Image 1 (spheres, rainbow, N blue to C red):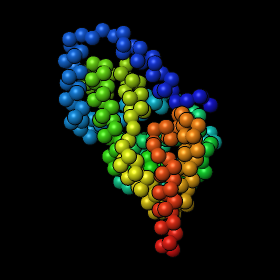
Image 2 (cartoon, rainbow, N blue to C red):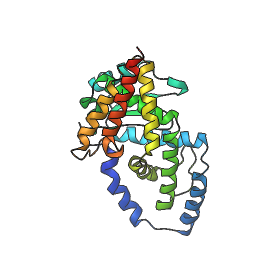
Image 3 (cartoon, helix red, strand yellow):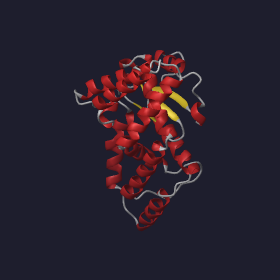
Image 4 (cartoon, rainbow, N blue to C red):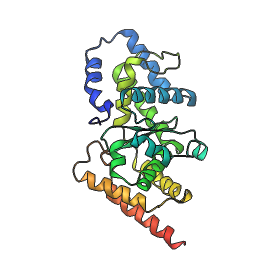
Length: 254
């Protein structure tokens, strides 16, 4: 298994390329156009940008295919979730040690093998429910839109390339890094936690598992939480207590 998600390892390469590239007048004009466009990205453009970034990540990270223990485990866990809550979802495992998971605006959910090593099936499902919440509630779209604006301003990138792409091939890795480093707001995290908990209840899964997942992330953050959800999702201990409270309230209904 590789040490970490490849986008993190490649960041310095892309940053160096951007630093030494020539800034031309046309580049400034193109970047200005992208800054304006970023504020009004259509749903179609957002889907294209999302798919482009996921394609890049899938090509640059080891995927657990069918027959791989990680791939088979996830496939069993998410069976029947391909069209959850009006969304078209797809799921894959990256065979990397990071304790993390993410979802993109187009409904691509990616789970890291390191997270699967750490958590039980129901704990993994609570994380997946949380990530689906980010898509359903529009958080992932806003995150991409913000990252797109930052990318355009920082890199003075080329204009829209068309042909099913929003960013040029040489830009996409740097953009993915920008998305990876972005953080959701506390409100977004809380709303997605609530969505994930309701998801667990509705699906008949062990909703106590969400507190267990957060507790494990809180324990990781005590070691710095590098490469984990705890490093980008603040307040794991607080979220553990909140999830326990929700579970106790759900128990009381029975």
